[in-house]
Image (tube, rainbow, N blue to C red):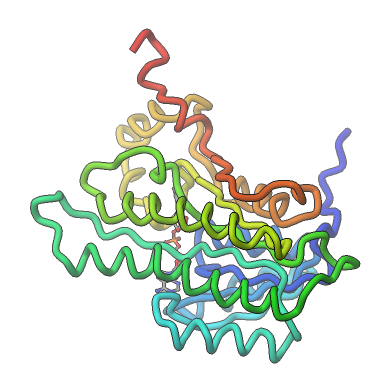
Length: 272
Ligand code: NAD
């Protein structure tokens, strides 16, 4: 029998999960707390949701704190990092997860819809990663706590690779996250800061509720997933823990797709 109990792989580490109040972020926050990290659960609006995640973590014996900030606003992001560092002394892990969709056909997409998605999904990742990297460099190595001086995990998507009609703002933001992640990884590696992305496929969360409304819609979605099931936030949580842990110490600058094979071009499985 395998032992599935958490191994405290993130003990003595401070983690920030942006958008930790919902969906994938909540899954990552719970998984990291179960591995011993003190987790800051960021939210933009919806303090009750963040409080519920914190409560769930505490009920399971973990440690978590809710922290408000709009990741697309520089002053909010800087205030959030100051607050965490004042309370905990430093930070070891950033999971830059906040993200939104504002869908429209290309001909009808407004500048506002374009800009809002780029602001949260791409600029938000830049602002949070920059503050995290500044803190990692300021603090320097703590080899007793973590092999790497700091870890940044960007929540990307299969759409950093797969084009998505009707969602050009979202696909462009995730394509941007890919190059942001890789360029940061290249620049920060000499500081022993690891930067990676997770590329989720279809994970059941509020962001895509409307694509799973009916059995017919769910069946259509499943044709895109060779592994034959829609993912859960816990699937991403487990991978995020591993990427942040010393087990992944030689992994930097890569996107780990967690997608049940969605990026395998399933349309070509039957001779194309
Ligand atoms: P979700 O809607 O459940 O969660 C999004 C989170 O982002 C929420 O906590 C929300 O409060 C937060 N957020 C939104 N705007 C913000 C802002 N300005 N500042 C701070 N936080 C803000 O959706 P989810 O599916 O859990 O999405 C999480 C991430 O995963 C996103 O980056 C999304 O693009 C990515 N993703 C999701 C899927 C999927 O199938 N669910 C697939 C690929 C990628």
